[in-house]
Length: 612
Image (cartoon, rainbow, N blue to C red; front, side, top):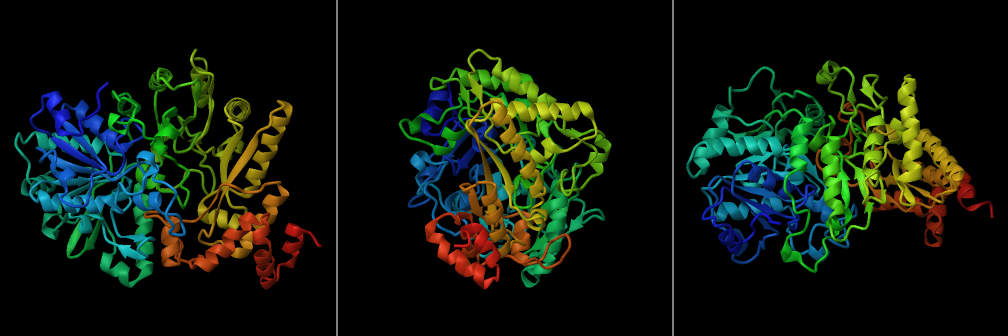
């Protein structure tokens, strides 16, 4: 087994006297397809390039970690982490999380806040003539003017504070290969002036550049989408909301338009993304020679995120749910690309050879558990569509939601001799399962899926995400009516009863989402109590860049309707909502009663606590 090199000694063992690309990562180096730096490193390696990874460099003192491998021939890459650094570090109440899941032993001191900015600035200080290319979630979701919850302010395109030369957004396999080939063709060491000149002459898809007006390739064109400038957004929240509608629509189109926004006298030029990977391209990304293990430097240390996914398999990419608070579509898009059965089974067989594998797969899933192989029947219609969700406010008539292909994957995996059981840990969209398609064969397949999911693939608890009970709030979340959850629970309970199973349904809920009031939360408490739930999986809404919920929360208006929407913002308002999750705790009872009396909802006091 070989890892990509991380030190001078490892380079010497390989006999390398230079590197084409050096990637600085905010995560520990785990050579696994769930870790972005490993994917990009392996993709570039497969193209014949010499790539090294510097995981979690020390950003204090003399910057020796940034110096140790010298300068690359082509560029430095920044991979800040598989999760946004601020979400990874802080709760919705801005308190420090118990651990950093992507660091050895969960340590908090191995990455800075906003590593994209910190690493880029250091590299620019040490190697001002070497191009720096940004990628990953943190940069991708900050590619244009965005609200930052942790700084409580509107921030510029992240190229501005970082000083980097290019940003690759979304899933980066295609754009990083295209960029590397363009630079490698020059057959020389690339410096910043040459790099900028190449980006103007050969604009790269799925990238963002900061350019002077006269550098914009082809000039500003009639079909470009020109956003309000960053400075206008600072002055007027309404224009920020107007901007976001365009940004979200272009993130979910098959063929998007170029987006341009002025900032600091320059222009952030967002080139259209590549179309979704074909199946063989996605297979190639997953079939690369990953060791599937943490680098040996972490021997004896625990990496929490790796522990969660080491025996799991991702089946597809993309999500057409379009949930208002989720960033998946902004990064992966709504179109589903599914791996072939051969690629999936190949990975499962590799997992069965791991020394600590006991026969149980923790997840056969994806961004959503049950969207595998789903797409529009008439792709011509899909290519013209700009709906951010294929299933809200209703399931598109053109969408094929047949679960047969997914059932075939489950059964093929379970038939392997070393598999005792495969579980589904990703979130299940029950609205897809309960929808009457008008096609008897599809409806039958979906019923079979429900039965098989509940009887064969639940590890005692099935997690699903109704998110709220108020249909008004759910509409703002782009989630289905709560009645569907109730219907699914009845089916779940019936199947468990028939098969004599003792399994639990674990629902996820969110408080303080835009549009949600304390009264909505009080009614949620009563409704879930009546369903015999004492809630565990709950969270306050956390505003994260590039979601419709965040823009609504920050601006106070909905970007599509431009109508005002209430949001709980103060700690007092947020606590007033959150406490209703825990109505069953004696410590919350008096506060809840006091608030319900203030709201003149004594009827809910009786329903929660009884007349006594």
